[in-house]
Length: 144
Ligand SMILES: [Fe+2]
Ligand SMILES: [Fe+2]
Image: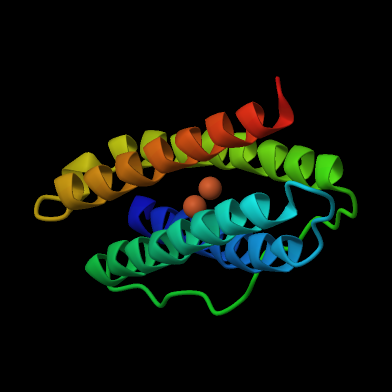
C-alpha cells in the first residue's frame, strides 16, 4: 500500500532530522578560532530549525495514522571548522534530494490522501525550503 511506503519515507526523514539536530549541536561545541562564537551561534540556530522539522514530520506521520520513529540516522563526524561546514553542507544537499523523493511518492498516492495531501505537501515544501536556506548559509560560511 502506497500509504505505508509514505509513512516509511516520512519516518526516514524524521530519523534524518534527529541526526541533523544532534550533529549540529555536537559540532557547535567543536569550533575553534576567531569566528568560533559566531559559527556556534549559527549552528545552534540551524539545530533549532531541524528540531522544528522533526516536529513537522511527526505531525505528517500522525495524519497518516503512523507511529513516529524514535531512532536516529547515523551521524557524520568532523573536527575542523572547514570539515564541520562541509560535512553538514553535504548532509543538507542530500536531505533536499531525499525529501524531493518523498514529495514524488506523495504525489503517487494522492488519490489515497483525500484529506491529508495538501497538509503533508505544504509541510514537506516548508522543510525543503529551510534545508536549501541552510545549504546556502553553509556555502557562504565556507566562502564557496
Ligand atoms: Fe531539517
Ligand atoms: Fe537543515
